[in-house]
Amino acid sequence: MFVHNISPVIVTVGRFSIRYYSLLFMCAFLLGLFLLYRIFKEKGINVDYLSPLFITIFICVIVGARLGHVFFYYPRYYLSHPIRILMIWKGGLASHGAAIALIIGVFVFTRIYPVTFYQVADAASIPVAIATSFVRLGNFFNSEIVGRPTDVRWAVKFMRFREPDGGAPVFRHPSQLYEVAIGIIVFLTLWIVFKRKKEKLQDGCILYLFLFMYFILRFLVEFVKEYHTLDPSSPLTMGQYLSIPFIIFSAIMLFAVGKIKLKQ
Image (cartoon, rainbow, N blue to C red):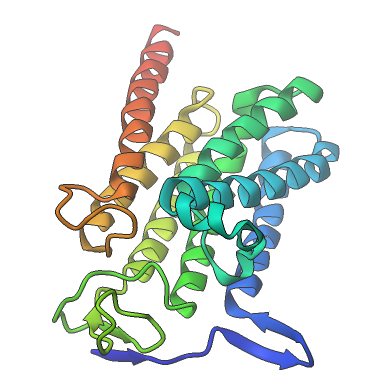
């Protein structure tokens, strides 16, 4: 068992602070840009489209993830304190909102530039998968989105986390680290599939495989995550309810993509 009392701030100079969360978030985007460049080159997509696509993804992920957190999890709180919606450096991003905004953003992007939706969506899914690990690691440093109380050997006591009952911190599942592992697993799977099967892959396969794997694994991890919006008497968490549509949709589309491939 471990005690987590790490400050979320790396260094402070005057009124300016550098936080682990912000640093990891930026690292995720820089790594994503590097991976997108490699994928574009391998798929023969014009790399001149990379800069506007990167800007589109950056804006969509931040805005979508933040609004997802605001309206899916804590609408009353943020509508009462609207200025705090802008404080993303304190954490609070929802992957479901990011996924929705990203799909919309890619669709709009392909209406402007001469590339197909699946060309861009498949390429973007790979770096987005690993980016989720960086964000969840940032959540770990922020002592937020914690797991439920447990006595497993790898449990963590988050000293900076405010317990719901106002009591002393207890040992909990490090659910953020479980989701770090999810991002790595999904990324490696997508990367291997892309590298070994890229000449045979049907358009949309990478995108739907990403959505299916990520959200079904996210659904499972939610069983050990603390409730954030719904009452603990609820059979599922909000994250699980939000994951179900993605799982069903991506499973159907993977099946459809497979059938198209078989007919060719």
